[in-house]
Amino acid sequence: MWACRLIPERGNRYRDRGKLREAAIQYANALQIDPRFAEAHYQLGEIYLKLKEYNQAYAELSRTVDLAPENYRAHVDLANLLIAGGQAKQAQPHLDLLREKQPNSPERVTSPNTSPSLIGKTEFSPIGRCQSKEFPVPADEG
Image: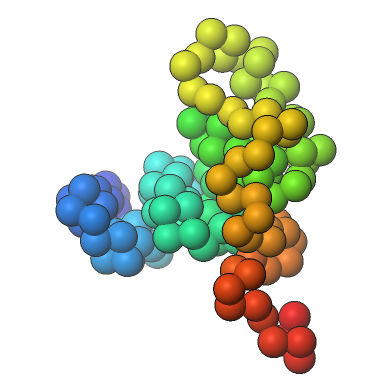
């Protein structure tokens, strides 16, 4: 399975150069070879966050924590995404795990009482679709 480990290295190079779509393709290619490659799911989720494709980010980060529950960065990102989308109750298990396993971690989770940068810009539903207020989904599609 060396090929599926080499492909994400290409994705990392694209990501580091700001070529996020190209990076996403490389991570997705690695997942075609090994769908259980948790780090590729995580990196793809990070790319989707940067691209503001929040539903895809949610799916990849969720898959990451399913495959690698010890990936605390993924729990932080997933909790932040859920909180920003108004899903604080769904974020709670991730917050509880982080408090238990990483009590002194420098990773930051946004408090449900704060106003994260995603709120007001995006409507996020982990089971629905993410739509920008600037580009709403037409009524017949939503």
